[in-house]
Length: 130
Image (tube, rainbow, N blue to C red; front, side, top):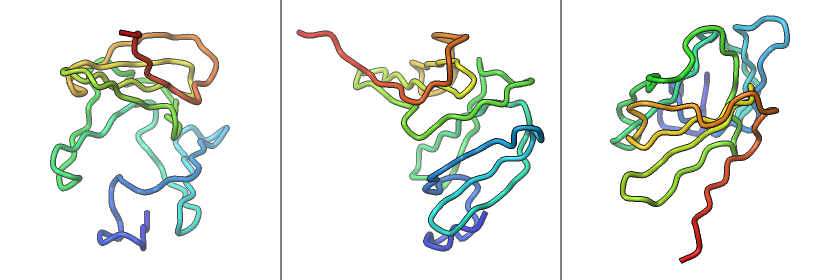
């Protein structure tokens, strides 16, 4: 999708998404609205993926180990991802399909932390009092 305000005009990922919506009947159609307009795309239906970069976005890896790779049509909303400040940083996200996943190895593998919830709009991280 065109991202006219960035140096790379058609990046694979990394756009400032304001709204993301899956078509209610066409499960492989996804609509996205950002600074430059509204766009429709076809995506790999049914696969939940996380994208990781370790060099400021020059290279990207799709991290899928432990995530649903069939018949999953969930989205992750803007506030539904968080990380902690531990030495082995944990990353957590919730989906519109009602699942929460977490990793403690930089996305190398994910584990379901909760399932069968209503859509997850926000994932906060809290720390015990010292």
